[in-house]
Image 1 (cartoon, rainbow over the protein chains, first blue to last red):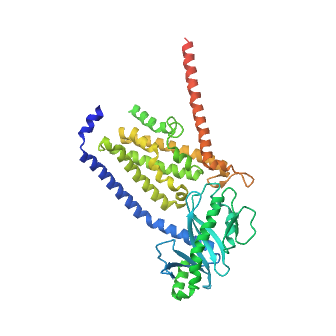
Image 2: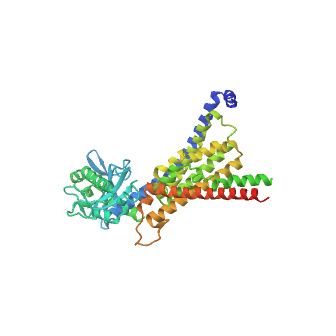
Image 3: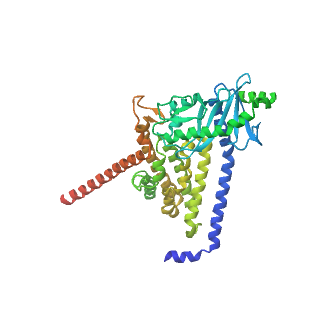
Length: 228
Length: 216
């Protein structure tokens, strides 16, 4: 009863004003915090990605970002879309080591994002790093916690394609020992790499040797970048 | 004066033990079960909830005379959501690895009924001082509960505590403890323990009453 009479006291204008004001204030606070934390977050993400590149391409000391644009691979450090770019790794003498390629796809729980190193000369995957996953703790998360599984990707032939087999049944150079209890997650990783290969390998072959496209100056810049 | 000090102390201490949000009120079960698979995650989640609850209680209590009753719940949610978003960005910038582990559960603090419950049941009806004390108590209680669950599950499920190996390579971890069933199991046993404590206390009080009745 008491509530009923109270309700009559407050006009709808006041209600709308209260909510609008609260929303405005909240928006203001959120935007300022977002702006304040964004540089740190972006820097961290970029750092994680760079570190991952050095990890999946052993021997790399400098790297360059390549973007696939208008049917061609071009060097571009400020690529907006992560999905459409790969990294080229060079060793101390400036020789091409290989490519680090990102891939993403659905796992058991959520999207798995990963990065893997690929050597075009040997047509082999030489390292794989999971960047983001929410696989089941204790089972699916072994795709990055289980050193044995990760080691599968240290020298893996991509021809004709990578296949996940039951643990201990690995015979061919293109086979991966799946994790017991996490078959779906293991297969997801293999599928993501196969898909990324399907997308990038033809482009790499068509582009032949992208080293020719790079000017010497940009290479020196990169090396300094890395030393810094 | 003495009495009000006593009251204030009561408001703080009740959340820790007598009205513990997890073990007694059984609120906020979603984050409780989902992110307590390691002690670090539990601490991070507890800390985030702590900040959100205390800050929201402070604001709700300060503004309680200006918020019309009809829109109070929506206003509380806006206040809570603001602090949750702030926490989300801050964690992402300061401790990105932990933020990655907690994932979707930080934004989901908005839906933690323990927080909204405290605003509606306490902060909106009491002075700022009492509201903050109540929030501090409840948040500490929630923090301790998460920590207890996270520690048990990490020690049994990974054989480690805060990532430090405890039992050496020969220990076979009980993987089930860090999976969802382990959460339910541990929570159930802890609830059992709390209820047993309460029942024992009640029996003691009853026996004392009986003795008093018989003695004269």
